[in-house]
Length: 359
Image 1 (cartoon, rainbow, N blue to C red):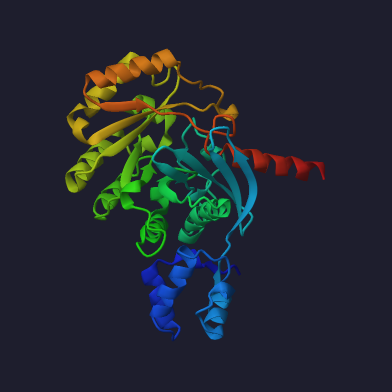
Image 2: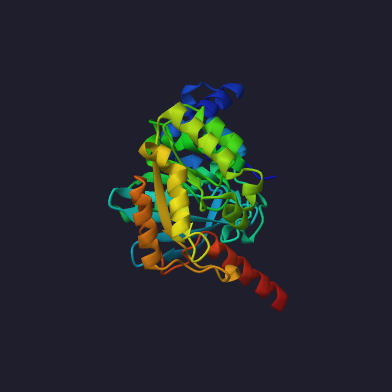
């Protein structure tokens, strides 16, 4: 039986665990400091803990739930990691370098069941949710890499936009956010974190009620139900009008901006009429919304789709701007490696399958 990752526990849960096991609460504060400030790799390095406490930790917890399988580095400094979990499943994590800091994109599920027809993540169906600890460990693995470089760099921003639907793994994602935001640990600012959802409406309401400063992004990708349903199966149960009601609730409850993600696919959702329709949809929210126009990363298994031309993206951007809707064509990163989310994992699994067939 696999041990629980120590990274799965928020500081409050760690304090409660120590009390349940007859230890003082302050032990949790000590362990927390070793994990996230000193960033040790084993419990045995926690030198201010007694042997009994260290033995207790070793008996109950794991500190290394991820094993590095493949690392790809782009010319622009983007690094893509393929990690293997203890059950041999694989996930992807990406480090991106921006002018404003170092951002990490984390995965929340093994595979995905949302069924977006353009996405590499959904090529392999969901096997399970990641634990909070497996999500936190992705940040730790990247931070360990940065520590080894000796430049004093730290992860400053997080986007929860990797493989899987974060709101389909809601409780673990929330524990992850609380852990990395903890001021006594990694202390990554809530406003420097963004969670993306494909549109689980009931969870959007719940997230709005959390009272946290973490940003929300909605993968919209189409301005109407006909086009969106053809691209995203989830739209059948969470149609555009329901999404907009949830968006309105979120904006009223939080008074925080929301980002709309919009992948630009040639002759599918990038026509001038789509831009006008999107402008009409968002014009009354323009003070608190922002649209990311994302160049499509082609996926060989979805060869019915191709990237919008630069001219079409420029026209789309200009039309939206006339409605007063803030929008930008997102700068691409990591285009010389497996850029689309899920591609690296999919390739690795296919390699293993080919080796198995040969043997």
